[in-house]
Image (cartoon, rainbow, N blue to C red):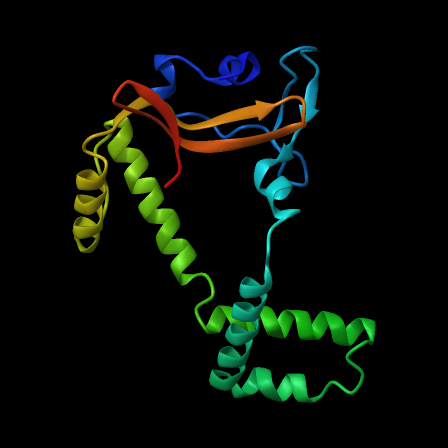
Amino acid sequence: MSTAVADFLTTEAAAERRPEPERDRFGRYVMPHPTTGKKVAWTRATTWAKTCADTFGLTRWQCRMVAVGLGRRPDLLAQAATVTDPDDKAAKKLLDRLADEAMEHAGRSVRANLGSALHSFTEQIDLGHKLTAPPQFAADLDAYRAGTKDLLIDPAHVERIVCIPELEVAGTFDRLATIDGTRYIADL
């Protein structure tokens, strides 16, 4: 582990509820540079990784969600049909809004919201906090406990922000886990 990364890993106090880090208007972490101490807006690790990501499948899924949403909402379909010039600035704005509404109506964020909630529940488990999950998620959380029973998860290193100064990139890893004496960064 590099010294710069290690410097951002905190001690046992991390097991307590951590405040949300400072961010700039683009959502980037604003943190002191480990060498200069000057506050820096770090490129997000996910943004950096997306520069080489293949988004074809995601784009096709979004198109399917718009089609499903328009099929379920005749009012949105009718509004889209009024557009005569899709390159017109106002028409683009309207079509973007309609596409967003159609995707949401088709359930675009349902799985993401569920995934975020389950992620938060597992954080409660790994920090040793009282679990607040509704009973319908018991099987999922029991599966998580079973799947991680052989891991030593360090509560001080759950959802930790780290940086790579050479790349001016920062991100949050899910867990630091030890397996057979070797430490790993674990992604849920």
